[in-house]
Amino acid sequence: MQFVQRLLSDAGLNNNAPIDYSVACISTTRPIYLVFGDSSDYPDYVIRKMIDKHDFHTHQVHNNLYQLVGNQVPKIVGVYEHAGEKYDVQFGVKGAPWFQIKSKIRTKDARARLERRLWKTLTDFHSAVAADPNTIAAGSVLKTKKLQPHEELQQAYMQFKNTEPTVNTELDKLVYFAAKELSKMPACSQIPQHGDFCLNNLIIDTSHVTVIDFEDFAITTMPMYDHFTLALSLPSCSQEPSIAINVLKEAQVATAAENLGINSNAIRWHFLHHILLRLGPWSTGKKRAVYRNWLKQLLGCFIEAQLHTNYSP
Image 1 (cartoon, rainbow, N blue to C red):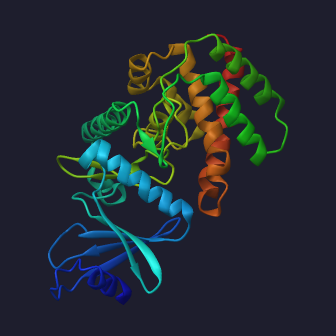
Image 2: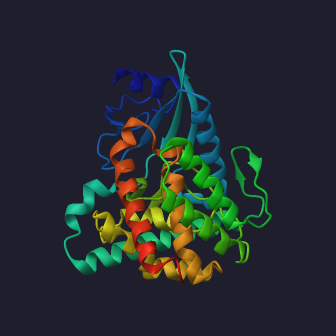
């Protein structure tokens, strides 16, 4: 990890002081380097190598988000070059990722308190993003016209079928029915979704929760997408797919839908959109293979549940 020390020195980020940084590397879709100072229990810097256009896009999205939401996201230091490669450097934030603190959440009350904080974080994040009608993502101004949920569902289904060519007659019928139902309901306001608003992308401190990872930001502007992502990742959500579909009955999900003006009967179709979109190109890589298999089981359980209700309200 000596290159990190040289990068910080070349960028003038070590204040010309001989700080003995320690570096940890997290291997995700691209390596992330956490740079710790002499005494800090959280990183001074977080460094990502910028490999392709999407990485530069993500950096710009993050920068735009910081202008909108402030310290709800990490502050960017800048883009720096070292040995012919470019790196995105951010300031570290106080707190810890979920995998470091989950062993401390031992009681039902502690879990409930944490989950309330996370739901509030999502609400605050969406409110800040939606507050500016000229929200900028990917370097262009998003259209402010109303979104047609049935069209979003159909598009998600087309993406799904491009990755899963096997014919599923029951799913075809269900999507057709759902789109027909949604077409009768009012259009929704567009809200750019984080894209992967789950426990793994939240840094949790005693008084603050910071949102990270914007590689999938604005994957959709369909309301409720992030709510289902969060709900399915919470400690209270069973990993058994037949039980996990009960997030549809989650009080926070129902409240969010009501606040967004979404008909209570439409919530399940927003959930179907969520599953189908995540089963599109988003989860086709090897690193998401296990999760993709789980999503397929979740979809199967959802279809089965709807068959039992005969699709009726």
